[in-house]
Figure 1 (tube, rainbow, N blue to C red):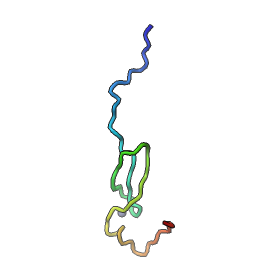
Figure 2: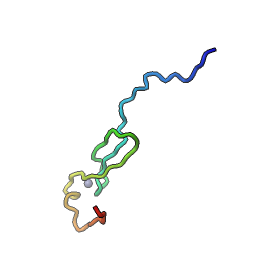
Figure 3: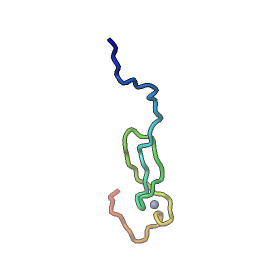
Figure 4: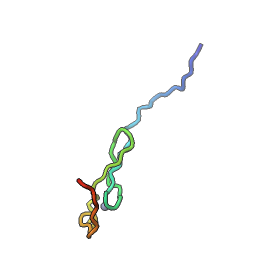
Length: 62
Ligand SMILES: [Zn+2]
């Protein structure tokens, strides 16, 4: 008797870049990172507008 259980061969995939690094100010995607699962990271894109937000204070108690 032969068992044909969907032969999954060569399933060695490169790590997917599921982690996304986005700018906390403008939402621009800065970078992607190979993470285990979908994750979202916040950073700063380095844009002048984001480095020097004019009067737009965010209230994150960090
Ligand atoms: Zn930005």
